[in-house]
Amino acid sequence: MTQEKTVESIISGFTASILREHFGKGPSSVYVTIYKSFVCIQIRDFLAPMERILLDQNEKNRVLKTRDLLMVELMAEFKRNFWKQADLDVMELYADWNLDDHSGMILGVLEEPKSHKLRWPEEVDETELRKEVIRLSIAGQKEPEETNFFWLNDRTLLIERIGIFTLLEKELIKNEFQEALKLAKRPLEYMLFAESEVPAIVNRPLIGSYVDWDFEEDKGYALLAFKK
Image (cartoon, rainbow, N blue to C red; front, side):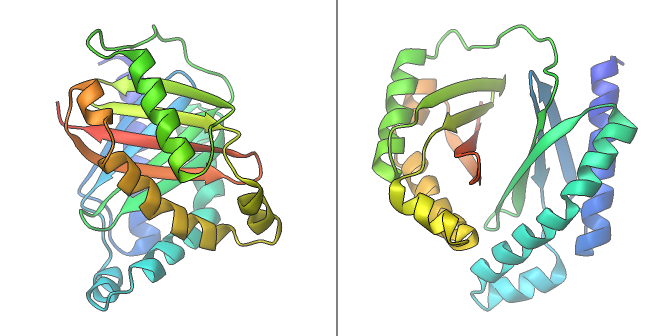
């Protein structure tokens, strides 16, 4: 077993434990990928009993808001475990959830990138992919000042967009409407990716999308999961 796989197993273990302790139920599976400056944690079958009741009462936003608040509280615990158990210095953490299929994503950004050979599927036209993602960004907000792609594996594409918020969004952020903005932007991003040409360009069916933002730093991440 390689050292990287050992680290992935450690991260998977403490992620399941933290979620179980604070939500009352842990996920059935946790899949971890470490690539360059990123630690991506994909979560499956994760829904607490109380959350199930709220979803039955059409309270999806309440569940998402509660998870957002709880994850803010858990950030320090996650970072501490990354450092103590996995010897990784995680500077930023992002998270998003798909309540329809009970899945989720937690993304950590490392201070020191790990050394990896650049991955890019030969069959994917990077120029066309970039044009399409920029088109989606313009449709949802504005053209990013910078757009970066990271293929974490053959089925997972991470998109980093920097300089993305409009003047109106910046005013909402300044007036502390971050959570309302997040709840409004998420469904729009999901729809844009689902209806886009991205799956055709990468030649893979899109099975999930997850998004989160750093409002203070004016950047965001989108994780696209494909069926290979």
